Image 1: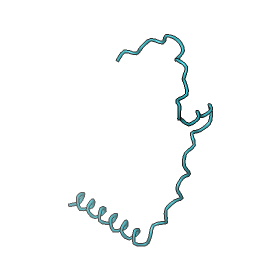
Image 2: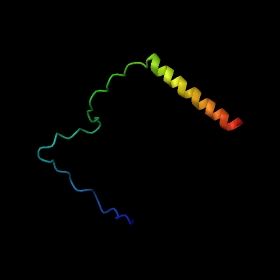
Image 3: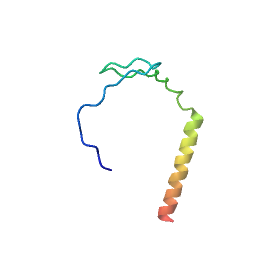
Image 4: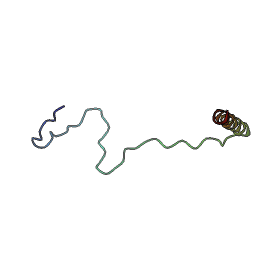
Length: 66
């Protein structure tokens, strides 16, 4: 794709009717607040994670030494 040569400044921007006001230079765009962190994992979730990790480890060892 060929780029168009630079031929001067860009055209001026005009406000759009009904749009929110433009952000001043240097300001950040406002965003909604972050959600608080969820509840910590339960014992059941830890047990499931440990069971899956052990199953993966066993399958890996069987694949390597089997």
